[in-house]
Length: 245
Image (tube, rainbow, N blue to C red; front, side):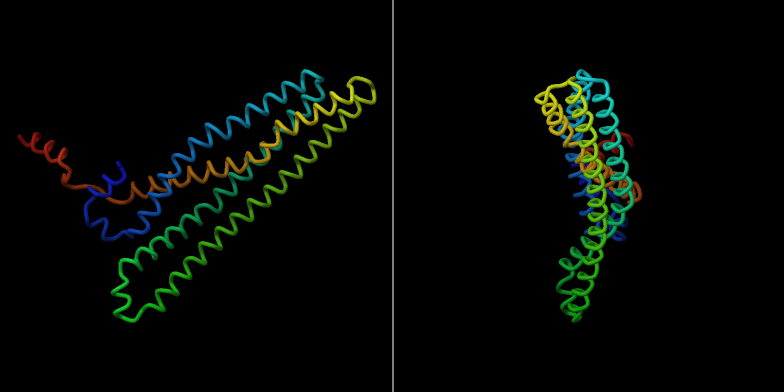
């Protein structure tokens, strides 16, 4: 509502120099990102943190070496996953946003000016222009996706290594008689069940960072869009009349 009011009240001169498609792209991305940020923080990342803390405390109860190993591996896995995904997102997402803006701008331009494009026989050129910007967007999106996959694979390898190390520690305790086989298996299964989402924590951080980038991009665009020099809404007009009196 407030975004619509802003663009509605901004001086027409500022709209004449901006692409309608670009405005729509930034508003849609920014609006959708608010919901994503709330969902990720409330439902996704909070549950991962609670599960990780629970399994660390539980394994400490059975032995300091189990708890310490869990704490180290969960901490390192989460840190590596989060940091690399933040770097990946900050590197590729601005480029994806730029290309997506171009696609939306050309698409809206094409729809608005179809009769004009047809009248000057420029349909092939406009079609080629659309294909070019879409290909550029696909290239940037593919690069972002591939980098995310590399991070995901490395994280899974590190996580599997943590399971092997914990299994080795538990097996040693079974051999020394400190743990029964049933408890040992339960500890390993508890670790896997409670920490498996740590591997996907980077994906949640990636979505969160991407959403924050979209919101920041929208506000940067608004700040540089232009201003309002005279009142146009009913409340503003009444306010100006009151002041003049």
